[in-house]
Each structure stands twice: as structure tokens, then as C-alpha cells.
Image (cartoon, rainbow, N blue to C red; front, side, top):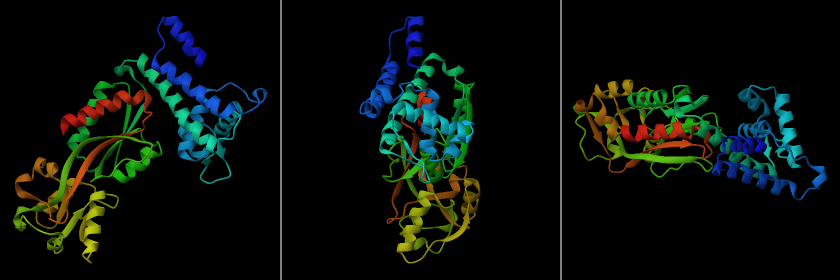
Length: 340
């Protein structure tokens, strides 16, 4: 692989870039850490890109079977690639007897640098290909609470700018999407996090906007502007399904009052909830800007209980080593910020 980079640069008479340096440095670090203390003659020096890739997928999925399915390889083929890499570096990288699989200390160090290597290769490939010609998959997750119009604009921008990129969109609750991007089942996600919540370690997150969260109710209910959560316990609620952070905060607040909320409907669809709320059949939770943007805005009220003040942040989350998909992620970020 390194020889390919050298020949590639020489053929095009291009200077070495940071991509080249990152690759060489990462490989050197792996060999320094895992090979220097071994007998030189006892360890191979060949390191294949496919072996590194298989190791990273196994490390992230914690399963040879799942890794094989993702890479469209048999389990035995994945195992062979792991064995090849372990022979190259002269160390056991995975505790195979553990379920799920667990990295050894050497494996954890190798994983960190392997991600840098793969990201560097992806970056080099991306640098050689114009955005419109970028191919492959971009697996995007978007919170169901973001809104259909924003979802449509985001997909439209990506499809227009990256015409050969296969874009796959999953709509789900923020909590579920976070788990999927952690497992690398998705490349990037747009989620909502409440108050000072942050993305987990190992992921890269950009806070795109903050907005007040409160109670949405029909004007016909004549709820006072200044209320406490206890004053709203007589009403039924139209809420998102479990996993929604705003819903979780409401339930915690009600439980402190000694009475769980009376839930009329649990639905992922904003249209159904707002229709019921507009008719005065229940109340719900929403961001202030979503209420203002609703076609029902003139018949709804946004209320912030004095003892239930929270803010919702819109986050774009991905792996810090997103590699060649950095351009689509940046395109998505621009679209979301422009639409806010």
C-alpha cells in the first residue's frame, strides 16, 4: 500500500501531502508499539489494507459473524484476515473467548491507529475524485423529531451535490440513532439532545442550534401563561415513543410530583400529535420554533412551565475518522444551518 502511494505520487509528480504523512506515521506507530519488543525475525512486516479493514469492523461490531455480513465475507474469511494482521504485528489483538468479542490492550492501541490509516486512505481517494463523482454509500440517520420539511431539504441537497453517492436515510429516535452511529451502522446522524447532554467519547459532534422546549396546547384550553407542571396534570399527553429525551424529562418531572403523566397517544408522527392537540384532546411537548413553523400555529400556544425549563440542541454526529464522507457531512451541516 505504501509503495502504491509512492508510485502514485511519483507518476503524477505531486508533492507528499498530509494524507501520505498520516498514513506513514500511523503504520510506523503500530509497528513501533507492537513489533519493536518482538524478535525481528519472528514477525512478518506485510500489512494489508483488507486485514486492517476487517479488524476495524470486527472491533466495532464485536462479532466476526456481524463483521462478515457487513463486509459480505464468510466468517472464515474474516478470521483469516484477523490472523494475518496479528501475524504481521506479532500480537494477539482480540480476546476470542469473550462474548461479545473484546480487544486486548494491544488491540485497543492498534484499533486507534488503524482508524487513522483507513481514514487517511479514504481522504486520499476523496481528494482524487470530484464531489459529483463520489460513489459508494452514505448512511444517514435523522431524528424523527427534526421535521419532514428539513429532512426533505437535507436529502435534496445531498442528492444534488453528490449525484453518484448512494444515500440511505434512517428515521428514528435520537437515542437509537446514537447507538447506531456508535456501532458504525450509520455514518452520520442528526439528533436532538436535551440541555447539556453531549455526544459519547469517540464520536465527533457539532452543535448546530439550541431552542427552548416547552408545552404545546390548543388556545381553546385557555391554559394560563404562568403555570407549573402540577397545573397540567389534569390533561392527557400526546408524546413521542420511549427513547425521546424530552419525554423522559417530562416523566421524571411528573414522577417527582407523585403522579405519572396520563398518555393519550404515543406516536412518532408530529402531524397526528398536533392534530389531537389542536382539537384540545391533549397537550404535548415541542420546540418553540416547530410550533411557530406549524401551519396550525395560530391555533396553538407554546408554554414553558416555571418548573420545567429545558433547551433542545440539534447535533450533527459522526465518527471523527469520517474520511471520504467528510464532504457529504459538511454539505449536510450547511443545509441544516441554513434551514435553522
